[in-house]
Amino acid sequence: MHKTYVFISLFFFISIFIPFFISAEDENNDNIAKIDEKVKEWTLKDVEEKTQSLEKLAKDKKAVVLIFLATECPPMDDYVDRIVKLFKDYKEKDVQFIGIHSNKHEKIEDIKKYRAKHKLEFPILKDTENVIADYFQARRTPEVFVIDSDLKLRYKGAIDDNRKTPKKHYLTNILNLLLEGKVIPDKQKKTRAIGCTIKRVRKADLDRTP
Image (tube, rainbow, N blue to C red):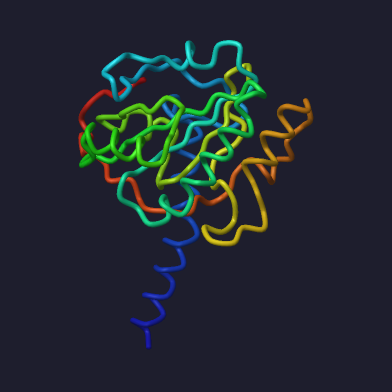
């Protein structure tokens, strides 16, 4: 009985307090993008081996949508048509979509094939060492991050609330609020992403500042 009580108490401590400590550590980490703060400038190569920068891609745009993608992920396949539609809906509204592949096993040729198959017309970048995924704390595919015209991070999380039949369209709502110049309520700035986990390269001792 005593051992059971100790186990339950330990489990309670881990589930309640450890996430709090991790969250506090993240808030004090200058190398992690934070909601409502300006993001750092960074560069990545696209699938054509051309270096692209956030500053260049965001120039004269009212918002930037970063979407972490995957070539082999059932939830990603469910969302890809929705992503294409979102891109087309907001293309003429000066919203820049950027796709980022951070899975360590994905090859450039596979990314090119996936892009061609689904007719993804926005820039597609390869995050070879997870530098950008780590900076934004991206965990899943698809997962989106919305940056405003001042390069401040305004939203992170899911595209919507269901991979099959969504009822709440988080990304659409955030973009509309930004384009209309309205304030985004705090409770809408973060949601839990739906999808496959990003398979990272393990290089804990590497300095990976964007």
